[in-house]
Image (cartoon, rainbow, N blue to C red):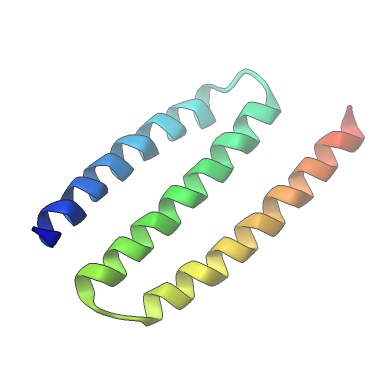
Length: 86
């Protein structure tokens, strides 16, 4: 049962990744692209956590945590830059 739920979560995350990637590429404004980038990183972190569950490797959770922190800082920097550019 758990394997089925992990598979369903992976499929939903994949579909969400494609939708966010579409918005990232098509986004008419820079703000839309920044938000889509943030969503893409969150979905990538979700994928890392799912892989950690499937493989049983705790190190992937550490990688996901570091990636989340760097992603958060990156989005803050880009938002500050866009705020000053307006």
